[in-house]
Image 1: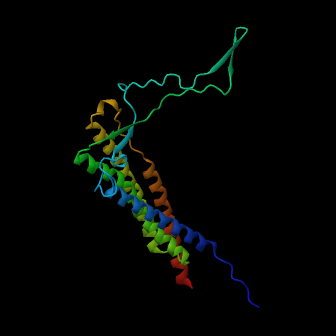
Image 2 (image 1 turned 90 degrees about the vertical axis):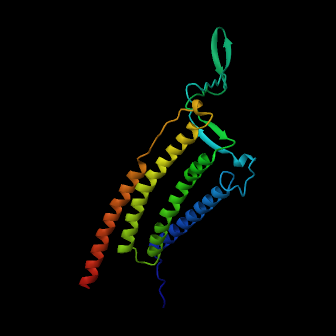
Image 3 (image 1 turned 90 degrees about the horizontal axis):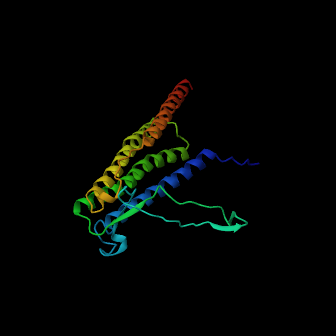
Length: 227
């Protein structure tokens, strides 16, 4: 009589993570290639005069950029015996914050290079982080996740998230500031440099996980030594 061997759910999870990491790498690589050969790169896939070739940047309008929304959603009021009644749906007001888009029809070579670095940096970081995650998932699928190699991979991921994520934030803020600041629409945008500390927080959490992983690796090594 043969007994069915139960499947290890850990291996299934590892396989799923490996697939998702692979998909993320492929999509990010496609995004990098499409950006480089697009209208603001080598101009292979987009026509120079096409809408897809325009360099567009979103931003918050300055105080000098006056936008009057008027009353886009007027209330329908019925006056009955001097009492005003609002008919239909509840009154909705539309206002700030507003975002406007600037389209640079003929960017300079410097603006083009800055824009490409800006657009590619985040996708490149996705590729760099997805690779060690994929390798860790594969080792989990093979049934041997608690290894010193995976610990080093966790430290690598932590460093990439902290350093790479912060660098991408700096590039995003700097690129928007430089491109808009040197454009004809500089006075119409509130050019502000912002940076997020979220990558540092996430990286520290991964570093804590790497420390716990090191403990697991040490305990496993000691257990193998006593057997």
